[in-house]
Picture 1: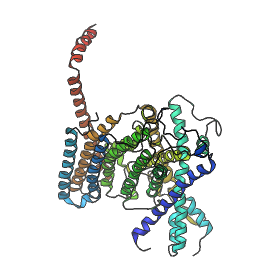
Picture 2: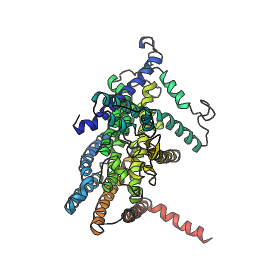
Picture 3: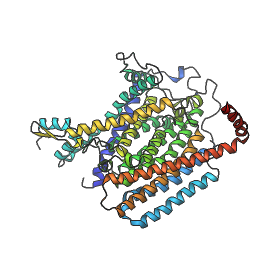
Picture 4: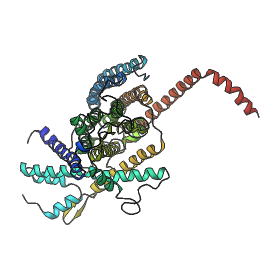
Length: 126
Length: 422
């Protein structure tokens, strides 16, 4: 119990368990209180995915437009960069002007990357 | 180990029961564990119950904004129990798992959504010493946990075997991950000013609320938190005219209810986080430090005042959330992403760097500056940046308009002059 990390994060871990309990309890109540009908007796269309009243065409788990993947990749690149800024923001006053200058260059490259992405047409939606 | 029931009652009334019990049972790990479980149960239950209040408020306020009455049947003429009735209804609905659904993904998504939202409340300080866990990386914890909700949405969309759900999920994920970047960048500004990542540290550093220091950063954070919680005008998650209900199209009963609860809890937390990071959190003109004595025990009235202050500040922010929902139309997905990557991200980066440089220079040039002077300098620089940005944007838009419609402009101008002459 002396380890500060355990002391700090034990309540969070317990909160995780409690939240899980609640999140499982509510749908369990729904299963308990709701009507229980066997899929065998149901009308054939009951379990078909909703497609505005039309019969579903094929599986939904198909390939998707590449633009979503581009956004995802952009996010990963930029998010990893930002993680470096977080510790800097806390300690920057102790780092002197060197820390400021280094981060200035870093942020400049960051913006440069963003502009490059923009000019490259990666953000074009059509 | 003796616990006086009166002292326990007093501690419960002024919200310090958590620290008190932890101190009392510090030597007994088993008892401490039980105490922690009780505290954590409260911590998890309160946000879930608050959903009823928040949901009812939103429906009522939104109805008034749209010139309707809103819920007015269940529970008296104000419909106070409408949400309870809705939850009962949801619980008595059949749980339908669509054909071809990925059962594990489909059923675990709403659970994950509500879990992540509840977990956020562990680091929210209600009053000077009242907090679930005072992590020194609390803001980082919040960012990490709130990112998990993206996974829940993706699981829901992929698991449903529905094209609307999948498209809705992909759109939502694109939106959520994009706006996370300016959100982190703008929350770094208060961290930078407070030199602390703990939520208590953030609040304690705000002798003057940070919104006075950096109103533009606050605005950016506000806009990205709107997008992060999927609120209007960024509510592409539920663009019902295009993709039915988005990622939760196929969900029924309480599984849908969990998504709704998770969404409301996340909104509540975002409002509270905005209050904590920019509006001074539980601070209210020093009244949060008040102490009196009841039955021989110190009673921290300030804790109640602090909690009330936080509640009122968050409620005001939530009112603005509702107000925007009642006012603004929805963005298109490409407008939304372009606005983020072409404006919000570079702008918040420039802002962050300016604040850093300025804060550094202030402490070099004026080592013993007061908070007021520091706030004034930051405010001036912020307003300057905002004015410059607006001017640049104005010129850019003007150029675009002229390039797009030279013929239209040429045609319209003489007419205008003609009309003006008469």
